[in-house]
Image 1: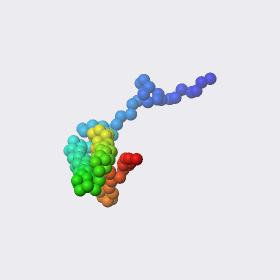
Image 2: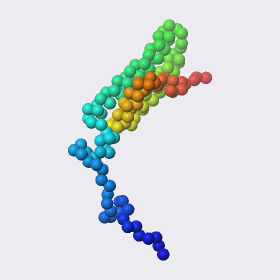
Image 3: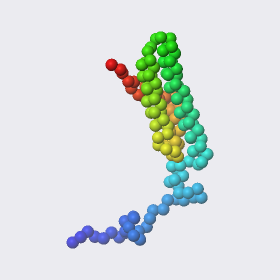
Image 4: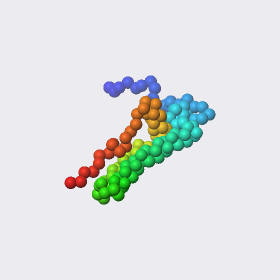
Length: 136
């Protein structure tokens, strides 16, 4: 004795009904919800790019300050080197946040997140997100 046969073939089986997404002249509805128009994607990319550039400028200020302190004799070359290494780590984390998911929906998601953060007054301190190296 086996299990009774189902009245309807499972989805994916030969001759079974396949679910059909709602379609319009712009494509399947599920695709349109996930991916914005070309203009929306372009605007999202510009917004993420502007954020990335502004955050990089802020990170570069740490290097500028370290070089100024070195020139004033306040710190040694190793401290400047550590600052440059810290900058590299912070810049890498910033890049991963902005771009590592690729284009399309990732950029739109990041753009929406940045808009929400701006509305809520939240920021990410990329310098503090990475631990500095400590020399012995």
